[in-house]
Length: 167
Image (spheres, one colour):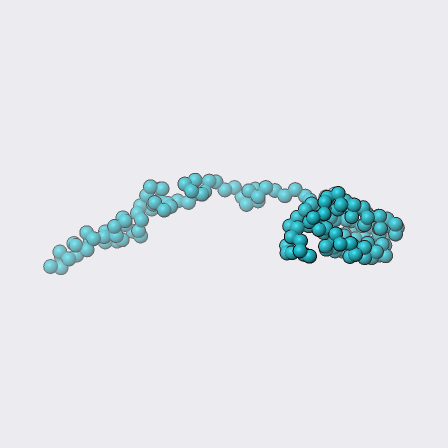
């Protein structure tokens, strides 16, 4: 028999118990027409990428089905009629996944995925130098190549020396 993955999204204001009832109804339709639901996964209430029929969230459910096409067609027809189901999609697959779906497999912690980061933030380490230069251990001054009172020539004193030589 052909194998299918069927995902549907139920409205956000429907309770989890009502979603289980919807899943049971769809499963019964498939089983009455000589098919079987191999796996049933409730993914929870999740935010939608965009508003769908005035809903910002939805209850996601995955059904792995091993059934003839007429059973799947009837299930899709009933899902389209039901007002609690806002979206559904059925895909024919070669093999059904064993165990939990990719969506339910544990994801690593966000800090682990990004690599180790030490400190950072306000005075927590990280970058050399900083706003106050010498105090933080960075370059010795606030301006390019010299102290705070002027670049290469040393500021006002350098200008005075130049004038004295000229006179």
